Image (cartoon, rainbow, N blue to C red; front, side, top):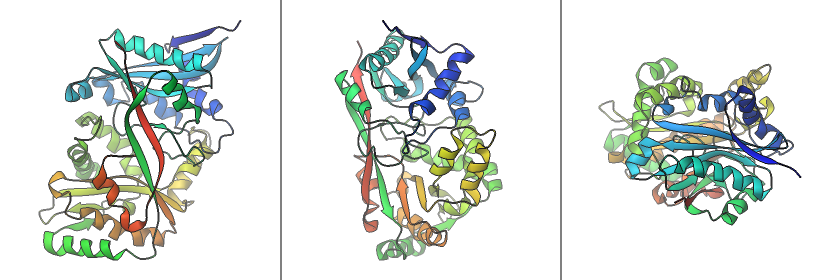
Length: 377
């Protein structure tokens, strides 16, 4: 008789098993896009993850007869719980073979870990921040994933629903074809913003990002995203980490910044040519050859589609047409670079204003993903 055991990850060997499991689990799956193994390890390292200053996190791995068959992480974000007046334990990094015994055991482990720390509800998949991957895919399993969003097999949501988990929130991604010309509505509203409101597009350099604009961008994101489901404001240490690790890699011509006539930052769009193929070729490893594929995806072997990672507008400028300035700037650049279509990151289904901005581009919603929840007391 086989023996299933769920262990807290405590040793280097167990962390290696945790990090390598997804690659084996999705072997041969063309839709799967791996995380960088270094990033997974850093998530649990207080020296590399400033979010752990206010978050408890514990990795768990399931073994059957000594062979890894799934893993999960328990996450308690104390800042988020205080902000939203909740006692939630989140689960993230959930992967499991198609065996209800395994999925139940993993979720039971996080549930018990959360109960011991005074939590009364479990929710997920979620990370520490809103910029971590979140939301379990519940349809469009045949579509290739993205670098910034989760992919999972179609049986995952069935397992959670069988365990009594219910929908708490859904995100949608939006896919659009890039038009040859800027739609008239965008062009007209962008002109109004320039002439009547005094806004302009600025492109920044890496030095400007490091010296001042990086912090400005994330302060704007905190202000714009604060009301959204589950969001907790980034600390200064987290902002420093994001600026250092990620923003400097983005092609600045694909990152329009909107300023007013006082030079104040009122909007930002962070987009990039898709890195999906580069990440798949890297296998999630930078060494020995993964860096070459990643660098190629950024520099000389660009994909024909873009990932629109995020758009944020300062609250007092929302609804004034600022978003049209992003499209008015980006569409000609996308055409110049041979980008034929683009896909957003996950957007909350009830964020109507955000979803409506895509209408002139004949959008198609894809890849619905879900945050599940369940009482645990």
